[in-house]
Amino acid sequence: MVSFDAWGRQLVDLAGGYALVVDDRVPIRHHQGMRPAERNTLAGPGEAGVIARATCLLEAVAEGADTIRGLARATGMAPSSVHRLVGQLVDVGVLARADSRIQLGAKLFELGAQVPVRRDLADAAEAVMEDLREATHRRIHLAVLDGTDVVYVRILGAQSGIASKVGGRIPAHATGVGKVILAYSSTAAVQACIDTGLHRVTPRTIHTPQAFTYEMRKIRTVGMALDLEESTAGVSCVAAPVFGADRKVRAGLSVTGPTRSIDPGTLGIAVRTAAFTLSRTLRDSGI
Image (cartoon, rainbow, N blue to C red):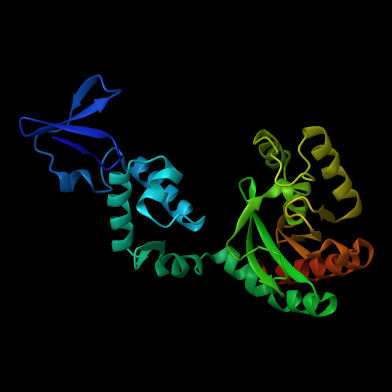
C-alpha cells in the first residue's frame, strides 16, 4: 500500500510500520507506532518544512490558484499533500472553501490588521495621502520594503487600469516606491536586489547592476524616484522617501497614473512635500 506523509513524500506500508521512499531506492523506516494522523501534525522534526509548505500554499492562493490541482501545479507538491495541508489550513481559518474553490480565510485579514508597524504607518499616513490625492487627482500608494519586494500598505484613489492592491507585492527594483526606499537603505539591501537578477517586469525595467547603481545615486541626488512604465506598461509614477522617528527610511510614497498624466516636475514637488509632512508626523509620533 502506498501513501504520502505530511511533506508529500511517498510512504509504503511495511508490516504495520511505514517506510519513506528516497529517490525510489532505499526505504527509510519510520517509527513503527506512528499513525497516519500523527504524521499529519505540524509538530516534530519536520515542523519547519511543513510551515514552509503551508506558506507556499498561502502564497499560491494569493496569486490565484484556487483548486487542489492548481495548487499542486503552482507549488510542485503532491496533490495528496496539498489536500491534507489545505484541510488543516481551512480548520484554523487561514484558508476557506467557497463552493469548489479555495480562498484566503478571514483569519489572515484579522492577523494582518494587527501588524503594528504597518498598521500605525498606514493610519498615520491617511490624512497626508488624502490631501495628496485631492491635490493631484491621481492614485496614491504607500509601500514598505519586504526583502527584495515592496508591499502596498495603503492605496487611495481610483484604479484607472492600475492593478495595485493593498497587501500586493512587486519587485522593488521595478517600482518608484521600491527604488526610492532602496536608494536610502543600506548597501546590503541594494545588493540583495541586484543578487536576485533584476529581472524585467516590463521592457523598460532597469535590469543591469550598473544601471541600477546609477539610478540609486540619481535618486539620492534629486530626492525622488520615477517609474517610467517599469512595472506596468502605460503607467508611471513619482515617488519620495518617508523617514521614521529613527531617521531611517520607513516607506515610499508615490503618485501614480497613466504615463501621459504624470508630470514629474509638478507632481514631484507635491509628493516630496507630502512625504516630508508624513516623515514629520512619524517623528512626532515616535513611529
